[in-house]
Image (cartoon, rainbow, N blue to C red; front, top):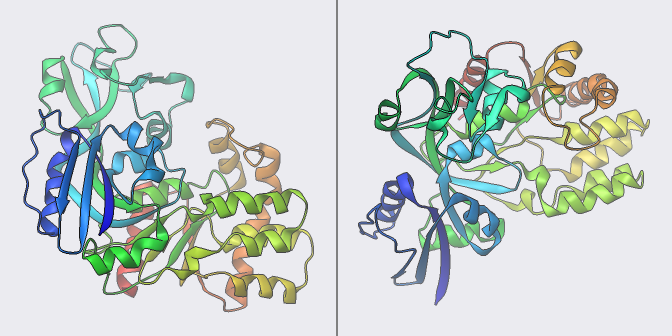
Length: 384
């Protein structure tokens, strides 16, 4: 009999695990104080193995699991691997908020303690030197005179009250997601009744130069209910196929590289796609190296092209400014590369638009992130 391995986060997400299990006719109560880490449920056509563990361990051994259940706070904080989001769950009253020490009168955030350093940098525009990265018990920061502000998850707020903190500002509501890295098993999950297909599959992409905020916008959309059963692919550009293909790019084999990136993603049916990168990424190097229109169109024909690409447009100066505030992670994060690719990205977007390959909608990247999210959601709802 088919065995399915589900990894789920412990703690506050256990009620979400119970909610999901009820959707597949498994009624079980799991106490948050329980130390039990493994459950097995025998169904008519499969056996479900449920593992309850910390998020860090879930991600470390993610290749072992067929399905994973974790909070969207982690989607917002760390999104560096390929997963398909199969179902979104709301977490009532669960939000990521800024807390302030009750003994201070500070209005401006000078330093902030958090285990969500990436979110703090993206949302609060705080210099990385003023973000105090703590792995847990961030409420202790004011007592240690490290910081008067804390960024943390709140549900009841009791922990904040007990530690002389008050909610200064809600940053974002947090949900939970059921995901998989095993794209080839999606149809099997549907056949077994573990997931259901969406009524309408809509593919779209988020793109723009580094510093445009495309990753933040992508992750914000993943943390929202786009439809009743969103099936969304997270960052296909970070698959093993893409990493292997990059070796071709290093050899200046740009045509081969551009064709090699997209493989099994194109085989997924009834999945709403969201990209942190898109075909535009490939077009930049093809345009820069003066490939013919025929060659470029041949590459495009090998891709699964989304129905719409949201291109985040920002001034070059702002892109450089934003990029300077993040840790350089690869050779494309330098100011020199930002300057080189700034116009190339726009040329790639315009090429798609002028040749009627797909819809490209330019979004003003200088506006508040919430406004960008609403622009995208409004357009998607119109099309769904």
